[in-house]
Length: 87
Image (cartoon, rainbow, N blue to C red; front, top):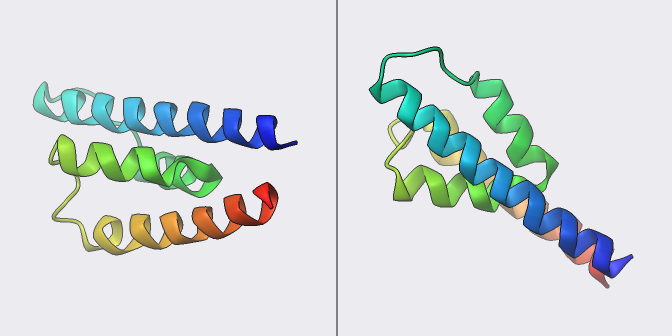
């Protein structure tokens, strides 16, 4: 069970980082964007750390209050759930 949780943690956070980065690239090129609810869903599913890192490394969505507050709250929820499943 521990290996599955750790593997999920790694995969979902890499996906979260990549999708957030891709949205930043699309924004710069004025192309179709990734819906915000998709970014929040990835964070909710356990990828909040990846989304948060991409948010600040790529300077994307940092002016949106919903992201500045919501993603750290989802990270806290993720930490609690990962902690529960890993003990």
